[in-house]
Length: 514
Ligand code: CA
Image 1: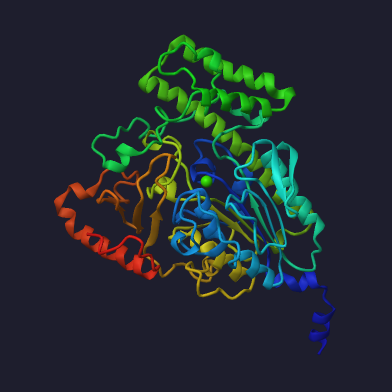
Image 2 (image 1 turned 90 degrees about the vertical axis):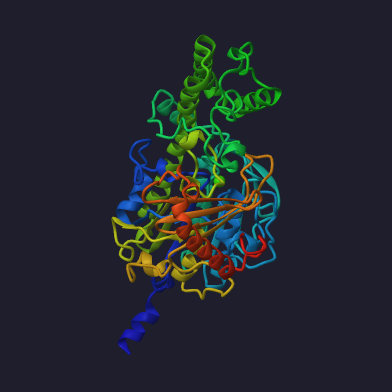
């Protein structure tokens, strides 16, 4: 009786500790190699690393379709693209269907989603939302509020989205647990850092990946057709902000009207007080091009460095803002009863194969960072090598919240893995399906099977297969399909791919995968 009385006396916030608050932070195109907990050679991210030190780092977390809108629809539904309907960036999410927002609300949570949404409809199922229209802008971004009004928020997007998220946390009563989905715009292209981080990174030189100079000859159609090349596709002026005044008379490098429009529109949005410094740095790049007139590998080397400087500078601001969220939890005595998840909508090429962007089922773009912390529940400083996927995120969050996972979700809860109740998953393979073959980067649609040792990819519109031994060839440069003695492995992997295709009920690629 005495125990019961004590329980009745406890305020709701203490009882609610049974299920943690949830903060899910997702950035856009943040490759794991740009987090020092994963790779120490490019950037230091002490705040994101804090999640690894105080929680668990997943080394084999992947997505099911490496592109923005589909990854977001998968987060909301726990389903692969063919089930949630968002196969590409041009399809609207059906906001009449239930999402993780509805399910958490039903389970007694305050729910909020703030930042990038990118699903062409307004968020459904969340108590509170404030979203960027499309991709928004880096400076003075527009935001759509719940009333449907579009407002302008002064400042840098990564700071502003965090400000909005912390204001929302301040505004809610803490009697109920909360679930905050904080979705950054950064570091999505067109990469525009804030001045302190541009200053920090623009003079640094970054190590080149071994495959930066890989050429497409000897590879299949998908390699030959893709337009992800830093050298030939990434624009000096439009993407890397090289001052066009220095490029005008250089054959092959002179800016197009689109480049000029992008460059001047970007400059115009930069705060007036900072603009001359940005222009000076972009002019330094221009002077190098005008003086040296680099071509081929030399030009690629410059472009790679400027790409890394701008991309990593955007991530510097993300790390700082993750720190602000963690400080908020500390100062409000919320750290111990809050599950924090940090991830990205997918990986990103940082010069491997000479590329930028994502889309391919190769590990660089299929992998996504995943770090989780809940002190006292998730073992500190732990690592996990099980195959996990973004279809698991919704069921995992729901499980932590004490909710029942609906049968239509295709992922599984990672809660037992994260809390150390189990060490292994009963899962040997992941499924992947990329669909979009539009104007952007022309990556041929494909199915893939990602196992622990092998990866099988089928570019079905051109009927080409690729098979990689991930242990011997982690960069996926040597297609074993060229080697006849791998036929047995191929047949076995193909059978497994068809098995997963049936299990996930994806019959859009008809037939027996001949
Ligand atoms: Ca993305």
